[in-house]
Image 1 (cartoon, helix red, strand yellow):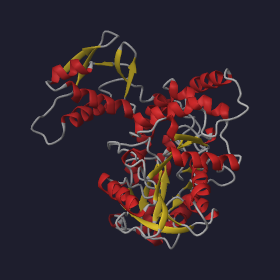
Image 2 (cartoon, rainbow, N blue to C red):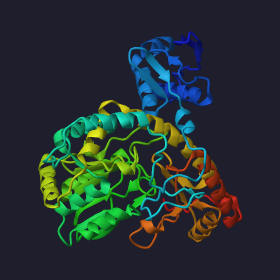
Image 3 (spheres, rainbow, N blue to C red):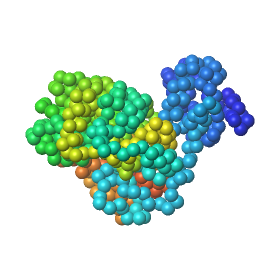
Image 4 (cartoon, rainbow, N blue to C red):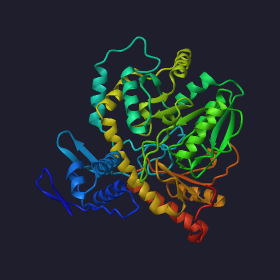
Length: 482
């Protein structure tokens, strides 16, 4: 055991050792053991860890090994840094303690929300909405005060607030390996707004646009509203199937970070084949960085844009990382295309609120958004674990995001959905996320906006309904489509 004295003069035993004969990389060994110690309570909130140099010396490994392990734990929210005083165990229970005491009060989480929020008392396990009860209210107030000190603009920048564009370019470089400067960023009101601006700029009636099948229904509707012909493109367990893409596509829309709704993460070789296809055909790849901020037990994959900025337009939003109510997103592209989109925006009299942009820029500049994301990764990881514990035999796509797919035999789904609704639990299905006849059947279970105890309760009800519907639980191993 290794020891380090904390600021409270307590001796902390670090249950960390490395095995050089193991095939597991040393970085993963160190990170896994520290993560387990914090999860199990062997390391407690506020306790100081050794410096990267000190721990490396005690373990007999290079400092790079410890530094990379610490960086991953920082990204996941397990560690906090205090300027000038070291590395500390984060308070992993602070977010959970901030949850409201009354269950069933979460906002609607449907990916395509109804006109009204669900009735009080219902547990809403539909996908698409974040937990908005744990944001840092003090940081948000500071950001608004700072934004209020800046003068209003009589001529809003069509590309977005320069301060926010610079802050976002830096954030995307650090978090998503996106090699873009402020000149490549245009601020939108969200992903839907970015898609519409892109479609209005580039598409002509009859242009063929590929959309994942199953996939994001709003994308299909936006492209169709601009006169495009929607071409369904199949997905499998890893995401978009690249080798069989249809011919004649003007552009293709994809969610490679966490495919909606199946949950696949497009692997690097397939990403490279997609970019090669785009170069060969001249088609534009529209990358929706859906759920990229939240990943569990897996290393981050770089954004497609970083691998092929000439072939890709990147779309992102704060709707999951902060709140849909903020209404801020971004579109990253080459400057000539961005100039075209800005002209379209002027013609459509489209703009994003200036004061909101400035407030978000302050959140980014002060590091408040990064701290919020680290806290929420831990919070969502606990909810994800609750879903997998209840529905594990059928869950797919649980390595990232705020939802999982429970793939099931087709005849079971309506019975389970109806039974859950009678018992006060709302769940989504895959049916409406298809353009054509459904090829993937099951439940899309979201865990973003329901409190942890509601997630456990709701998933317990769904599990009991599944067991009853199939009579023989051992048969519930999925249908094998993905």
